[in-house]
Length: 357
Image (tube, rainbow, N blue to C red; front, side, top):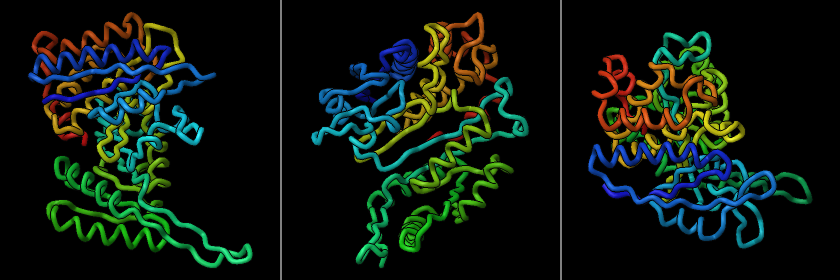
């Protein structure tokens, strides 16, 4: 497969971390006979943040995927034609966010209470499923009008169903607020589920979903939520399992695929000890998005071997005596030839048996 990938590295330590991803990309090319055209896009300092110029935005639109070492959906990195700074996800009109919570071997200790549970689920957040607009008369609210985004809802539901089909075939839908949005979601579910008769669909309230996330996260598979509930579920997952420094995040739009670490706190620490696992996992998420499941799994298994050797922990920094380059070299070598690193055991194969997305 040929893919054009735009790389956005933060001007601080993002370049060092991105270099580890490039090593893994070259390893995938060598091992699976793919070709990746890589474009390093510049980011410029703007006070305490960065900004992207028009050439960078155009390159993102022309690429098959964007891989960034810093979060693109929270800060206003791009100045639009109206002179306003907006996030890249807004500038590229992304309609969804995909947040996987991935299983890690026993060497990576998640928060107390979840040690013996295999936690492996994906949260799909519909960013543009529609919105309500208040209609007023003489300053008083009269009615609410719902403006739906049927196409965006259909696209994301299809992706959620396809992902569930390749995983454990369970889809949990968090019921949105508002009767009009709820009616649209139920109608869409009824239509799309006919094409996926093997998928078990469960509609539950947001409160019930939060309870399940806390008490029995091992039973979750694919979760579908709206733009209000989805970010809350992502935040709760970070707090509950303590994996925020290891997990990836994706944003999708019409022909747009953006991948980034869930947390970019490594950008504030000194050179050489940044933990690159979240960005390397973002690459695995990217490959999975384009149907390269075996390639994505090879990255997961290589990361698992690194964790067995104690090369990284839950923290944003690497433990002594390891450094960022050493970890990147190890993971790339494990991707190329796992026999040179050590036999991959059955437990890790089980951990990586399902697709990410």
